Image 1 (tube, helix red, strand yellow):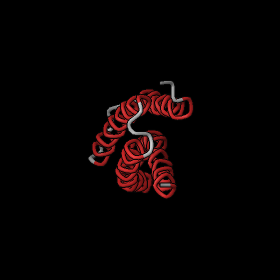
Image 2: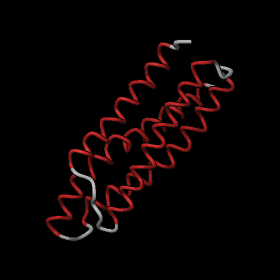
Image 3: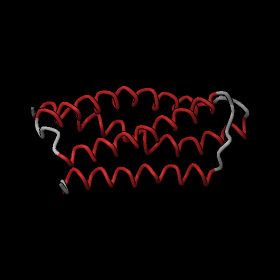
Amino acid sequence: MDWVKIIHLLCVMGWMTSVFAVPRALIYWKREHAASGEFGPTGDLTVRLYRFSAGLAVIGVITGLWLAWSVWDFAPWTHLKLALVALLAVHYAWTGRLVMRARRGEFRESDLFLRIFNEISVIATIAILWVVVVKPF
């Protein structure tokens, strides 16, 4: 079971890289697009990072469910963790919509919105870590 935990942690760390970096990268991509009017290297990097981490997210969720079932027998705290992870996944999917729009040259959101949007994922991650460490119930 230790290997499942290791795989889970590695995949979650990779996914979180994208969760934290892509909204911020959208700000730089937006500026690059405004200056050049083209897709550019920042856009390419942002799309690649988002796509790569989507696979890591799937593996992270599968191994997380495996651990919740086989190690913790779906203890009550795991339900809260899964709910928070589901909210973070919704945030990630929303980020994907922003990325797909940006690929078409549509940057509707302001820099301020994207900064606040980015911080929401940090708060969600802190909440998830708190639940895992404290196991409140």
